[in-house]
Length: 356
Ligand SMILES: NC(=O)c1ccc[n+]([C@@H]2O[C@H](COP(=O)([O-])OP(=O)(O)OC[C@H]3O[C@@H](n4cnc5c(N)ncnc54)[C@H](O)[C@@H]3O)[C@@H](O)[C@H]2O)c1
Image 1 (cartoon, rainbow, N blue to C red):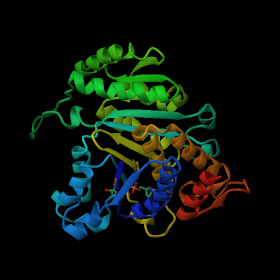
Image 2 (tube, protein in one colour):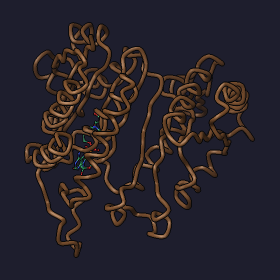
Image 3 (cartoon, helix red, strand yellow):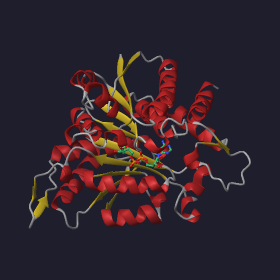
């Protein structure tokens, strides 16, 4: 039986979460998957209730589960609490305890939302549909460091095994997409990158159907802005992935639209945005990032690609019909079918598409 933990969190988390949960329940039932969903308090709301962002008993539940569906955590209410129990601490602890080593961040520009992209129309017209597969639990963020007033250093350390497992995830992901994988590194300068290339070449021989390429990270940053249509799946280290996935996300127009998956012993599926306290409680947040995180759960945890495709197609259909939350609503649009909607209206419209 599939054991899921539902952690809506703070701010807009519960609003977008309740909408995403309906889609999750509907698709699990439709595909006859036996499941349990256990709600937990996580983040600021858990600090209020238990004095800690992630209680030991909830962590124990998570460790016995298959995946966590997360909203977002944090907000001004908890900005002044002791640093050791801040909501963000809970997030880092969750990722560490789940041993989530592979982070998948898609960035896609929908045809009907091309005007929301900051890039020139002539570039966007060639299509943007990128998946960045980022190593999440190693590299320079976790390497040996020293911090002094006169000198400081951080170390980029990767073992063969750490690189191999993320590169395999990259190839598996590329196989589910357009079968193109680009390794982004800095092999002209960094020894660790040269090991990434060796491992990449070795693993590539197991995936002859995948067309491979290698690109230095400085060039990749430029190509993402000038020619994002060149990319399909990208695999890279923690630091480079952190920067490039944010760059890729702005191309799409709104962070409200973007999902993510962090895969490991227990997977975490969550939108890429935060708790958006400025719009919380108004029923105006965009739930699409969290709904597409549910699609990723079907694709990457359950391997039920059909259920994921249906959710993604339902989202596209609703956007094509002109339904928009405020973040992607264009006041100047001359398209008469474009209509501003609430969070729940968008959720209901997507569910409606699935039911047809
Ligand atoms: N993974 C997480 O839980 C996570 C990630 C980032 C930030 N945070 C926390 O969230 C809080 C707010 O952070 P922030 O303001 O820097 O980032 P944010 O992502 O919450 O918001 C940035 C801007 O994007 C808008 N926005 C975000 N999600 C949206 C959605 N679904 N629909 C419409 N608009 C949306 C917000 O209204 C805001 O204007 C902070 O406490 C921060 O620490 C949590």
